Length: 187
Image (cartoon, rainbow, N blue to C red):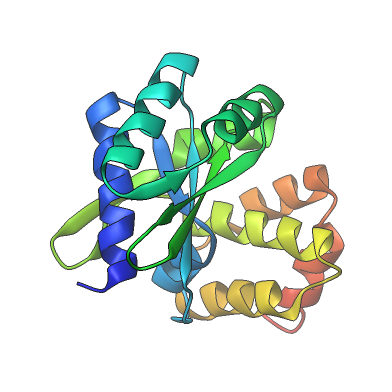
């Protein structure tokens, strides 16, 4: 197992032990659903309580991670993200607090358990929700080609996408134009 995979597994085990709902998203999810792409960090959306967040901070610090406890509490309060770094490998994991908006609630409800790597089961965002998140990140980062490449990879590999679901949420999220651009010329 790579240092990145070990770090991710440590975080997932901590979340599971505390009963904190989570889902893997970002490049790990898009690589799983589409074309593999090298990445040196992981993104997880989490839904902690203040108490479980404190337990997570303590547990990860004890497991050899750098964690800014004040930054984590601030992220929870503002529905933002914070990161943790596994000190030996310098592997960074972004922990994103689930936003209290309709799309974030829906994507979290739809997440599903899957085998991300051999023998390791995690909770992962669906292909459709990964696409929508990538389109949002593309918009926020000035139409990032990397994000759009990931979306195209999922479209190219996943044959049973719920395109109506994607189009409906893309419109709501203000990224319908990006969705249409990426799917241009596709059935």
